[in-house]
Length: 230
Image (tube, rainbow, N blue to C red; front, top):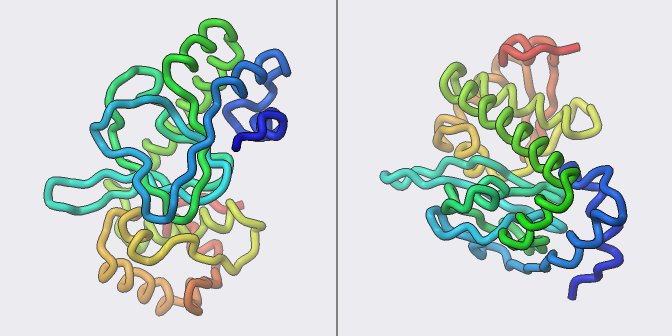
C-alpha cells in the first residue's frame, strides 16, 4: 500500500520534483499509484498506448527497443529515483520502447491525464518536466555520438569511466549489469564486447576480476574514449 506521507517526503529527493512546495507536492501524491513488478515482468510494450509515466522507488528497470531482426538496443538502465516514459505521457503517443523489471521493482506511476491537469495548475511542476526532457535529450545525443563515432573498445572505456563518475570515484568499479546487457547497451554483441575487454586489458588500461574492473590508467582511458579527465 502506498504511504502518502512517506511519498511526500521522497518525491522532493528526485531530480524532476526537487524544490517543489508542500502545496505542489500534495496533489502529486494524491494521483500517484504504486505498481509492483516481479523480475522479468514487462512494465509496458513498445507501441502500446501511453497511460502515464513512472519513477523507480526500488529495483531496476531496462528500457529497450527491438529491431525487426530481433536485435535488442538498451536505451536506459534505471534505478532508484530515476524516471521514464515522460515524453509519451506528455504527447499522448504510444510508448516508443519497451520496459521490463530486471529485479523485483516498485514503481510510482503518474496517470497521464491527471498529471497534465496538474501541469496546467502548477507551472513549477511543468518546469521540472522541461528540465527532465532536456536531461534525457542530452543523454540520447550522447548515445547517438557513442554509437556512430566510436568503436566498441572506445564505448567500453567511456562506460567504465562513467561508472566511476557515478560511483564514489574509486578506481575499482563493479559492472551493474550482465555482460549480455552491457553489450546491448553499447550497441554490440557479447563476443565483440569480450574482445573489447581483452583489448583494454592487454593494453594495460584495466584489470578484470569477474564483475569488478580496476581502472589502471585513468588518463589513458579518458584519451582512449575521447573523453576529458580532470
